Image 1: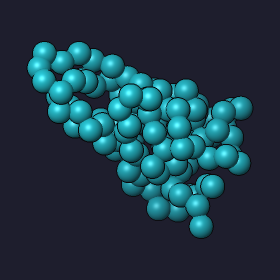
Image 2 (image 1 turned 90 degrees about the horizontal axis):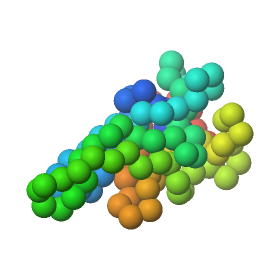
Image 3 (image 1 turned 180 degrees about the horizontal axis):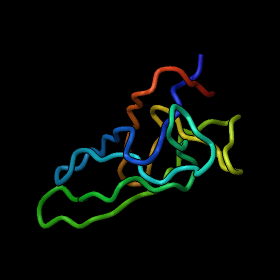
Length: 105
């Protein structure tokens, strides 16, 4: 069985691992490939801007989806994100999807 497909528009949770802002949500997504009422997150889509840093002062950023995506399912020409796909290259963020019916590999 595959992993749950991630949805954008602040629908799914993202664990940032940052001390300044430990969590955020998915944001950018497909405008026309829909799962349970929300667009799917694709390679290159950014999460919701949040604070980054291990000690204040902190600054904002919104990394893009970049690793651990589907290797077989694309939306709008880009591979889709699933539970445990990751945003950014320096600090890994995990998606925790609430939907329970659509899977991909």
